[in-house]
Image 1 (cartoon, rainbow, N blue to C red):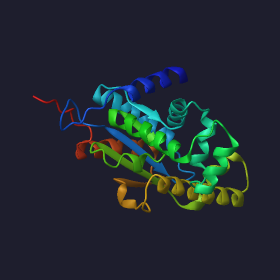
Image 2: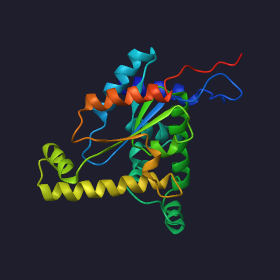
Image 3: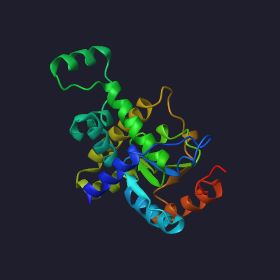
Image 4: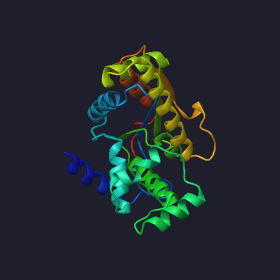
Length: 236
């Protein structure tokens, strides 16, 4: 299944994207989902993908770790070699020099950043995909047919959800949630020169009070009202 999805991504990434002002289709549609740690997005994304596939007649795909895999393939690196981008701050110039001297296979932080950006934008431009995290909300802001979701909830509730997964103490899960939230904020700012405002999101849901089904249904309804699911524009 992973090989099939990766092949699908390669075909979409390599396809030529035509400017809608000159050519054949509009960019998108694409959905991005950002979330606070403890708010699960994958189930919502899967529900939306299934419903959108039925509604539009086009296959919708959920993408998250697959973006790393495609980016790594473009750079001829193992995915774990670029995963640090999602777990740390951008390297300083001095860090870059030291890293370059220490490995003949070194790929600069800037090159990795550009490759990830290119992969996300190419896939988003081709459309019919739901991007979970990976800086998607920042990298797709210029795509008109896009819809941006954020999931949040009280910290204590999120920590309780994490406890069910990791079986650790509440204090440990509170600390973990805060740490991951900080890293995700760093990542969003990593792809954006200015601090990210909540105004980039179309809708913010409280995961504590809403079921995954409710969030998926409401999002699709708003996508329709916003015109995200409109037909491709064909030049005459």
